[in-house]
Length: 131
Image 1: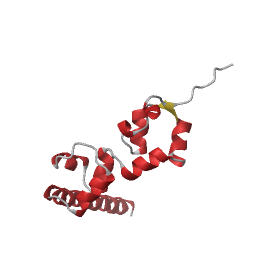
Image 2: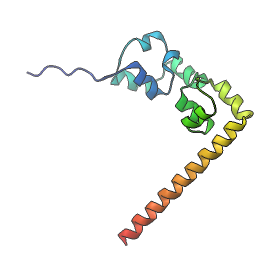
Image 3: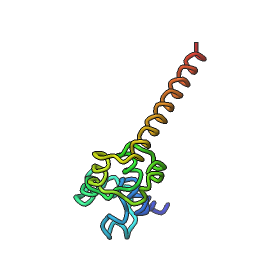
């Protein structure tokens, strides 16, 4: 007889990262224990009020801040943004963008356009090779 399998778990930091929230802003009981895959899936599908509120108002981790501002994480660092921001702070930056944000958004858009161009070129080359 084989022993029962133990459920797969993840550390609180990993769960917070996958949920797109800042670990120190989560409730203490979330921070103090590992989550099973089932518990994590349940949090994703039926977020409790604290999780919904964190996603709505923040503070947000850097990847979320960068995405909401339309810049890269490196662009945040170049702009001097090192601390988590709330939704209100992000909205303020978008409504009255400082020079660094305008420049970083332009740079980020150019990089995305170049990535799209290279992807289209590669697809076209693959299609030519099949003919």
